[in-house]
Length: 180
Ligand SMILES: NC(=O)c1ccc[n+]([C@@H]2O[C@H](COP(=O)([O-])OP(=O)(O)OC[C@H]3O[C@@H](n4cnc5c(N)ncnc54)[C@H](OP(=O)(O)O)[C@@H]3O)[C@@H](O)[C@H]2O)c1
Image (cartoon, rainbow, N blue to C red; front, side):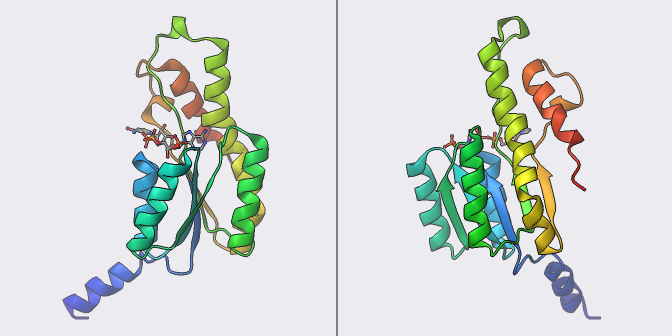
């Protein structure tokens, strides 16, 4: 095979044409980069965030780049909003989802002795419960797609101690989610 053909078939292997993805927290940071990467490879994406104007700006930008990205406002710490999000995704993608990227996560630097009960609840609902429940909600859609994948944006702090004990504890939970 000529080098050019070889390169092109290698590139084609990574294409995601016809695939669907839900990326949580796609309006900023790593989530924004993941949306752009997946959309650039041809996937159709739905994303969410809490701040509507920022989300709408991103959607406009992606539309101008020719990416197939939709979005909705959702606070993933709310069980009802997570259910609404998955119902939107299901109707938009005809009940089939290839990729779920659990990207939303929070990190505030604070000393362990300063952590309050409210901090613990917020970290658990944002970094752990939301991702866990979204996996459960996405399960039938992932199965229907015939090739479902889940990605957790975890952290090295979930494996080794790096002075953010509460964050690390919630990120460590993400290594233990199995769906059968
Ligand atoms: N940045 C790093 O160096 C690093 C390293 C290791 C792991 N990670 C992990 O990677 C993920 C992304 O990190 P990042 O630094 O890119 O975050 P970021 O820049 O703070 O962006 C977070 C995104 O999630 C959205 N978001 C936050 N809370 C939300 C909620 N309750 N419901 C819905 N959307 C919410 C934000 O939009 P709104 O604020 O508008 O909701 C934003 O789009 C996190 O899970 C983080 O723990 C990051």
